[in-house]
Length: 136
Image 1 (cartoon, rainbow, N blue to C red):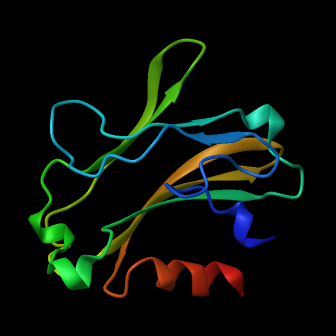
Image 2: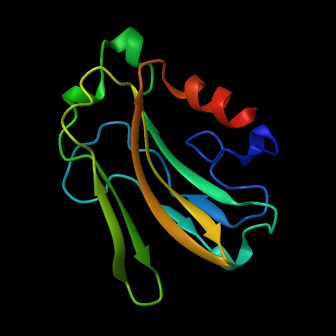
Image 3: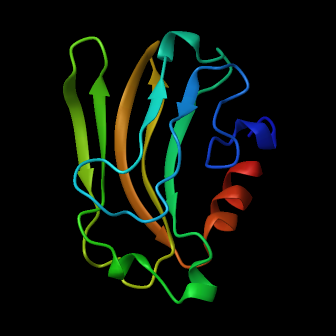
C-alpha cells in the first residue's frame, strides 16, 4: 500500500487521487437492496495502482460478539455505470461463521485492462489482518 490514505472506508470516504468514492456506511444493514455503494472511475485511478481490494468488516465485532455467520444475503456487485448493467456478483458462502472480516474480491490490472476476481477469504482478526497483509 502506498499510504494509509489509500484505504477508503467509513472514516476516509475518498481515495487520494479522487477515483474511489465511498457513499457512506450502513451501520444497521436494515432494509432491502444494497446497503453501501462505492463508486470507482477506473480512468482516474493512479497508474501505480495495480489492484483495488474490496474488504468488508464488522465494526467492533469482538466487543459486540458478532461475525459473518450471523449475516444473511451478503454480496458484492460490480456495475458498469454507463450501461447500468451488472458485470459481476459474488455472494458470501455460509461457511464464514467465525470470520469478522472478508476479502470479497478485487479489481486488478492485466494487460492494461481492469478485471474482477472473486476471493472470499475470511479472517477472524478484523480489519487489522488486511492492513498488515497489504501494508507489507
